[in-house]
Structures are given as structure tokens and as C-alpha cells.
Length: 279
Image 1 (cartoon, rainbow, N blue to C red):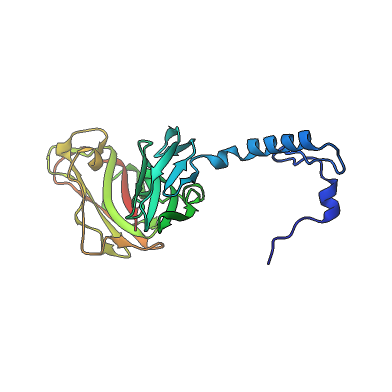
Image 2 (tube, one colour):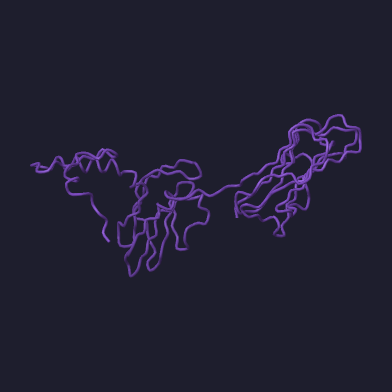
């Protein structure tokens, strides 16, 4: 079914489009040529960005690419345009702009890492001529940004004077894979025995996520300490499938305080962070 226009009377009453500033030619104006050129000029102003990096045919088996601007991995790129770019006959060619701002093309499809390029077009050629050009710029313009790693935390404020069991961290907000469990302490445990320390066992629905728990000991020194910054023993996450989590899975942690020596200062402000990468 065809797309409807506004009512005829409403169309005839229009004088200017408020959003773009495009003016309508008054009914019955004669001559209308100057007003028509004004209309075209304003339309071009309003649509100029839509022409950025547009691929077009400029020969039997060649294409051109309009100049334009884009950003790849947050780096602004200004592309000067190109003409006479050869296309392989009897094949489907994809055209894209890479992270350095260079025009690329190939018959094996687009690159897999969407963060490293801007897709421009798919060009089909057969029997010595281009038969179709499909604009792919919308795949970059109208896209949902990929979800990055998320972190869920358990915090214990103040001194840690005893072990903690089954402390709720939260729920996994995404389907993904646990890639790290980080143990941090605002102030590290200080005793006269260097092996005294604090460790954390993270779990998803009761299943332990690590084969080696993150740990901080007296031997790591006083003050702030963190296993993600080279202190203590870093976690080793399992790779048997139990590290995979589903959105809504309940995450808990057991914090073990192991002390045999005389305590000068307790570990305090202890934080356990579970890092989840999207599946």
C-alpha cells in the first residue's frame, strides 16, 4: 500500500517546514524558477549530511565515494572522496572505510569487528556492468551499541573482624562470562604474620566461579591494596562452563579472614568485584 500524503488542503496551506526551514513555493506564483532554485538550495542544505560517504556508480565497473566525515572508535575522520574505484565483475563487492580513514573493498564480506570500520555499500556486478548498489551506511547510523563488560560489587564498610558467608553481590545484568573476580581493601590487614590475610570466593547460584580465589595478605603491605593492581594473588576464573552466567543469576561471595598472628590493623572497606563480559 502506498504511503499517504497529508490532506490536500493542509498541503496547500503550508508555507515553510519548521524543522528544516525548507520553504514551499506559493500556489500560482509566476515565474516560479527563482523560488524553485531556493527550494532546491534549502533542500540540499537540509540533506547534505545524508550524502557523506555515499557510494555511486561512475562507470560500467567503477564506483565513486562522496567526501564526508565519520568517527571510528571515537576518532573523527574526514574522507576526501574517491572516483574510478574498480569493482570485480561477476561478483559481490563490499566497500568500507577502515579505522585509518582508508577506503577498502573486497569480495569476502565486511570485517567482523564492527568497532573498526564504517560499512558503505554492497555492489553487485554481472556481465560487465554494475547491477545494484545497496547502501550500508545505515548499519553504522542506526545500530545498538554493543554492551561492554559490566561489574557487580559487594562492599563491606569498616573493619572486617570475621569471615562473611553468602554475602549478596547482586544479579548478573547480562548473559555473559565471568572474566575476573577482584578483591580490594581500603586498608590491608596488618599482623605479625605475613601469611595472614583475606580471600574471596565468588559464586553464581551457589557454584564457585574461580579455581583460585583472589587473596590479599599481610605480606602485601599496609594501606590500600587490590588484586587487579598486582597485589596479592589474582583470581583464576574457571573455564569449565561454570563461569558462564545468565541474566538474573544470583551472585554471592564468601569472604574469608584468616588470622593466626597478633593484629595491628584489621582489613577495612573490603570490596569484591565480579567482572562479566557479554556473551
